[in-house]
Structure formats: structure tokens, C-alpha cells
Length: 182
Image 1 (cartoon, rainbow, N blue to C red):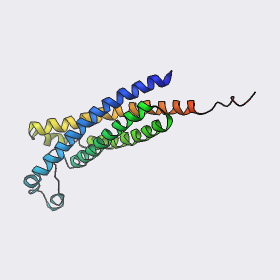
Image 2 (image 1 turned 180 degrees about the vertical axis):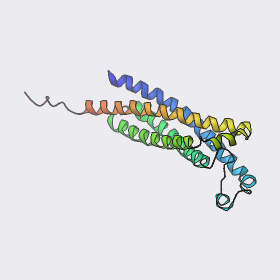
Image 3 (image 1 turned 60 degrees about the vertical axis):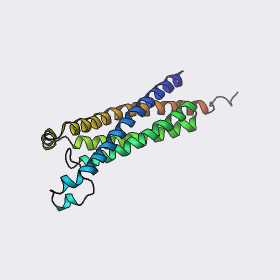
Image 4 (image 1 turned 90 degrees about the vertical axis):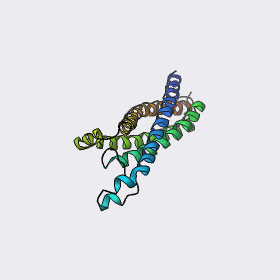
């Protein structure tokens, strides 16, 4: 039956997304912590508008801060969606699958928003600036970007599998049109 394949695919993708979102959350949390620790020394040489903000990211360009914050939000929402999605998929009935489908779609939208901000970081100036950074800053920043791109693809497939299961459960729940006729 189609629902068995959709259930196993959704379960596998939810476990994969759980691990990927945990990695994104840890690395984005590290980047925020790193930015908070280094804000005073790096932002003191900036002009007044940039010095006003409480967190200045010493890596990437000016869009990096937005990317890291949205990646952190998408990571936390993704972890919670994966955990609740697993419980909903294990029950595999129409109300639970519809809840999992809605939260999966919201998580995918947040992940795409963070991925779009990552693509905004790819300019010639930011690539030149990243060459002058410490190797650890470059590795962690590249890790969160590649993880965000990968998890947006796996979240798309997971959303599709959950939606297919929700549609199948809704069709199986509805009474047939020919059941009442003689």
C-alpha cells in the first residue's frame, strides 16, 4: 500500500532532519556566542550606525547576522517539528498527519528564508573578507551554510512524504460515494 512507503520515508527523513537541525542549531548558537564575545573589539572601529547594534558578526558580510539568527530560529523550530512530527507519524491518522504536515511546511519556509540569506552572503567582497579570517571562523560558517542548504532539500522531501500520507489517510477516512447506493 502507498501509505506504508510514505510512512517509512517520512520516518527516515524526520530522523535525518532531526540530526541535521541539531547540527544547525549548535553551529548557529556557537556563531551567536562568538559574535557576542567579539562584538566589543570588532565593532568599536565601525561607524555609528553599525556600532549601535548589540551583536556584530566578525565573519562574512553585513547579511551574516541575519542569516545566523534565522538559521538559529529555523534550527530550533526544525528540532521541535522533527520530534513532534515523529510522534505524529508513528500514530499515522488524519488529524496527526495534518498537524505534522502544517508544521513541516512552516519549518521548510523558515529554512528557505535562512538559505536565501546565506545566498546573500556570496559576494566578491564577502569572499575576499573571508580569506582574511581565522580558519575556525571560515569552517564553522561554511558548515552552517552547507547544512542549511542540505536540510532545506531533505525538509522538502519530508514535507512531501507527510503530505502524501495525510492525503492518503484523508482519502481512506472518507466514506466511498458508492457505499450508500444499491
